Length: 215
Image (cartoon, rainbow, N blue to C red):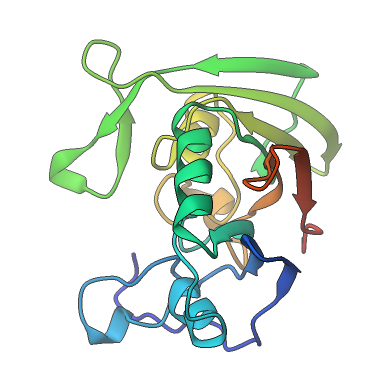
């Protein structure tokens, strides 16, 4: 994380609200939860709780990733959603722009990950000690030396998509941790959580919420 934290001050964007859940559209550059220290107190959770005091955290996105986040409005909803995330029953779709044009149309990345302790919060591939991490991907189109892809993580490891794409030779544009050279020179991390699909805590019906990709 850079030394200075200057999150965007765009007003809170709520995509859906009912008695049990709240769907917010997180901005790139805004922490999901507070960091250590008063200067890192501003985050999506605190902004949501200003407007919805009962809101409870369910999951998080990296600071520089934008897109859909679900919050619970009751402890029962938090428990239901938490269990679905833990059991990998939540279907997550991301859009990314990566460095390099891709020859293949789709694929699966199966590379176990572990924290790179001397360089935390960075993560790295460790085939012996890492935790399972699997990402499916589909090419949308190649664009002038870059590619637009959809990513479908089956697991939810920290920095999973960012490390996986770098490992197969296509780092995500603008990634301050895992991209180098020209791939790093983008106005933001080009990674967006486009949709979440899960079973609604009230009744169990399948619901999908989406956020339009801003890049």
